[in-house]
Image (cartoon, rainbow, N blue to C red; front, side, top):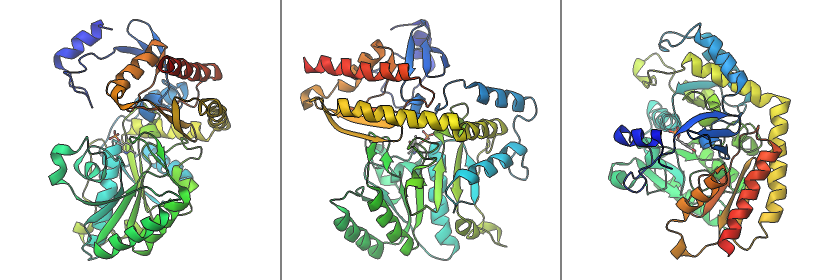
Amino acid sequence: MQTHLSKRDQKHIWHPLTQHKLHPEMLGISSAKGAIITDESGREYIDAISSWYTCVYGHCNPAILKAVTAQMQVLDQVVFSGFTHEPAVALSEALIAILPDNQEKLFFSDNGSTATEIGIKMALQYHFNRGERRNVLIAFEEGFHGDTFGAMSVSGLSVYNGPFEELSLQVKRIPVPTKENIHELESLLGRLLQEHAVAGFIYEPLVQGAAGMKTHDADGLNILLKMMKANNVVTIADEVMTGFGKTGTYFASDHLTEKPDIICLSKALTAGLMPMAVTSCTTEVFEAFYSDSIEKGFFHGHTYTANPLACTAALAGIDLLKSPAMQANIQRIMRSHKSFDQELSKNPMVMNTRQIGVIYAFELAVTMERYGDLRDRLFRQFMERGVFLRPLGNILYLLPPYIISDEQLQRVYNSIIEVLEEYQQ
Ligand SMILES: *Cc1c(COP(=O)(O)O)cnc(C)c1O
């Protein structure tokens, strides 16, 4: 796979989440359209994970391109402190209309990690501004909330955090709720809330992406959220991955009766075109900062806050999401996954299949000695079949763009069956 771009790349570029000594070569990608990405030698791959859950309406979607191209002729970028603009105001109206009812205010930034970092800082300062010292956060084991210091502290996947562990915020971790552990979990949480000055609880609602699309129980999560609220703990739903239709509803929080105080959004927010993030909150959170004294304000800001082009992409994305055609696509993929699961879950090589919305995941039943390079091998086996998947150890998951055709989706399923057959032999 040594290609022209790949060679030039190796000279100066340091890639994310990469040990370059083990993985020196990157695949050069030259274009993308709809559900297809094309490499520099012209080979096509179905993007079965929507390029890290971003391009859910398809790559280079014409409606998004048209809106952003028009906006770009009018206003490219302007300071968002002291100034405002139409794309940001229109986006705030469109987002508030689809977010859970209790959300009232939006704070802009530029990626998922800053969205959660801001949520955490809001929760801590909320209590500080009210004259309460609360410095402990609660988070789920195996959660993932990003790579900046606050986000990293609350993330439970320690492979990323090792060198920085001692520099972390104070975090207490709890397991995700199941039907079996809920009573034990209630008493554990009760103790934590009594013994520590808990400021906030951050969670990926119903499905933990980086942990391998692990799903958990909505009733259990509602119970935990109720307990947090009874103790005035600020609840922060990290919907960076789950937002914008992936779980079948606009947001994963729509499946829950207990609504969060703060919601973090990024990834599909801008339909994959531009980096941007939003941290939304309730009036109550906002009011803890609203004051005659300047230092009670939220002194956090990024240079590209609410970039007009990113806001325009997001606004066009929300129009697509709400359209009957896109909603029908989401339902169609949900039905397809469901019938594929009926076949796949009978396969002796497959364990723990799970589905929520357009997200489908399962684990490969392989012995541990084969586990080491399994991820890389699986990745290659799918790429050879023209399907881009990003396995996590022995976990495979699908999160296709909503516009994927039935025929393309069938090719993804067929590639799974074929690859499994190789392991069975
Ligand atoms: C990807 C992700 C983040 C981090 O977003 P970045 O844009 O990569 O910084 C945070 N939380 C969740 C749930 C994510 O999936």
